[in-house]
Amino acid sequence: MSGVASIMAAGRLVHPAPALAVTALSGVLGAILSAQAGIDPGWRLALTTLAVAGSQILTGAVNDWADRDRDLVAQPSKPIPSGLVRPAAALEVAGVGAGLQMVASLPLGPLPLLLGAIASGSAAAYNLWLSRTPYSVVPYLVSFSILPVWIAAGVGVDLGRVAAAPLLVGPFAAAAHLANTLRDFDADARLGSRNLAQVLGRETAFRLAWALALAVGLGVGAALLVGGPVTPAAVALGVAGLGAVAQGLAGPQRLWAGMLVAAVCWTTSWALATA
Image (cartoon, rainbow, N blue to C red):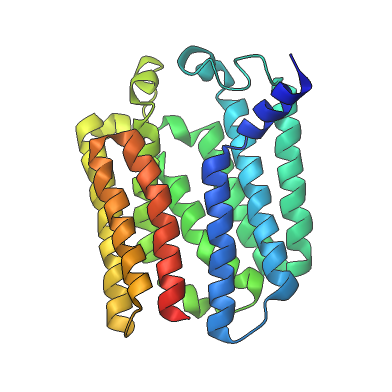
């Protein structure tokens, strides 16, 4: 096994696509909130974004460690079951993520530190236990609903600016959870998982995920239109996000990818509309 292959496999532990999306969107959200509040976020934005990145590294690595035996049956090409990464190395990567999150959070004060710990703790509960139960959606609701509040606290703006965010983030997080678990529906069924998608059934879970994601996009658009004039670019990005979700009717994998695209489009649209 080459060193390059091992490094690349270790990088896959953190689930780079969603990790990068969440980290980038967190940075963008922090910049938007700071601009709206008329403050220069400076080092606080950098540290908040690093803390989120650390949380994503921690979450991804713990997920692969916790699921290593299941992945040996369902996804043998993943880093640990393929033999490219030792289980102990996955815990080391998780430790790096936890350390990065803590070091970046400490200078921000007790509230960002606490909110980040709750978000990461919720994700750990999912990985270690709840992912295989009918309550599998709960950590998604908790962690992602906390995220905008965590970012607002991190950059030092009034938390009232994001008070309504969970109303949109929560349903989108639930849709993301269903879309993600539907990609492994057959493998989870073989392994006896009783996550929410399994309880609802494949067709119901898929339709619910698609409808929730689309409803969030329409809700974001309505909120921006009610808030005042929007630029053509903001409208175009909003429509592109809706299109990304709409094409997800082709299947869970397409829906999951479309939701990542939509999250970027809608966040950028909001940034342009509220600049």
